[in-house]
Image (cartoon, rainbow, N blue to C red; front, side, top):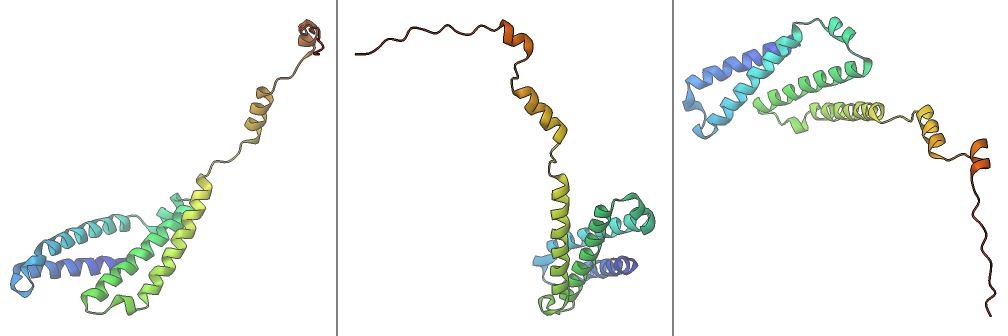
Length: 160
């Protein structure tokens, strides 16, 4: 994580120097670079916030599924930033092993998502279901049998 912070900080410094010397890049991309610099600033702030709490303290507060999510997001972020670094160095990241690593991480992220979705799925409360069925069905009791009147049978006619 410290490497990420130093990478982001050094990249921000390079961006600031580039702002001074705008002749080195086309002016059409200035807005994109400014937005990118702003995004790097927010990543830097988030990383500093995350680094302010020790990892062991953070993991103690989380459930195992949340720990897995945190680990996956951290490693995905690190690899994504390396992807960006490769792109800035003129190396095609699609031909680099980092692409397979990102795909592998995404596979695990999908597995964790499936597990979380299964946990969220409603579970059948057998006691409540049996009470619902029992109360929904009418059961004659002793009082009802004696007081209920059976309908009188009507005379049947023969049809000729």
